[in-house]
Every structure is written in structure tokens, then in C-alpha cells.
Length: 152
Image (cartoon, rainbow, N blue to C red; front, side, top):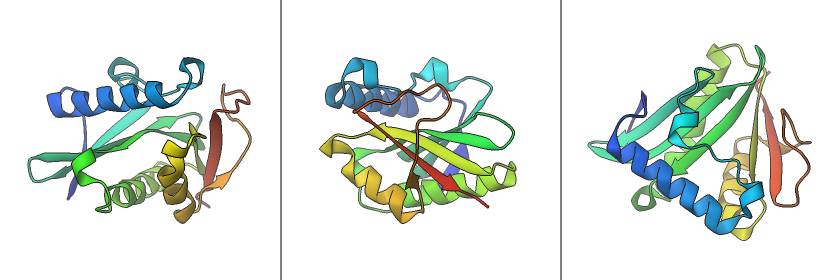
């Protein structure tokens, strides 16, 4: 599998992100959906990666710079046909290495609390993420779970 810095122009990536947004709105109340659309992911403070298995898109992940020492994990998604094949673990290892090289001290994330998100919670815990308070502009929300990974 190859992970590439992505410019968000490819149709496969755009389709996967649209699927991601649709699932977020299908599982969480609209006011609790914090997933970004393609245009928002093109922000200069976000670095976006796609994972490929040959010519097939396997997944994606983004890292948003919050400050010189803090980053936020965004848009982590595995394509349906590549689930349970280690794509999420590979993407998290890549983000860990990238964030460390960029000098970040920690990575935070917001995810849902519904049963749909349990596999994501398990993956994040496996990589050392722990529950934390809301960060950046997030507010307490019963539909949001906040987690942080210390890179030190």
C-alpha cells in the first residue's frame, strides 16, 4: 500500500469524502457533524493523504495544524472494500510519523459517540489516544467524543 500527499482533485478521493460526509450525517445530528467537505479540506492549514492499493483508493486521512505544537486528525476514512485489512492502522502510523516530523506535541480528534463509531474508538485507543476535554473551538456535546495522543 502506498500513502500519497493528495491534492484532492481525484474523483475517487472526492467520492470517498462524499461517502464519509453522508455517513456522518446519517449517524449524527447535523449540529454534531464536524467532518469537512472537500473545499474545507483544501485549507492551507490541512495536509491531506490518500492510501492506495495499486490503482484502488483504500483510504484517506488529514491533519489540521491548530498551532505550532498541536494538530487535529480529520477525515479518517477507509474505503468499504478495504475495511479490516489494516488501512486505518497504516494511515495512523503515517500521520504519527508526519506529525512528529512537523514538530507537533500532540494530535487531537473529535469523533462520534454512536455505536457506528466503536471500531474507530478501538483503533484510536490501540494507538494510544485517550479521552480528553473539547479542544480548539469544540464544545461539550453528548454526540462527540474527544481524544488526544501525546507524541512526546
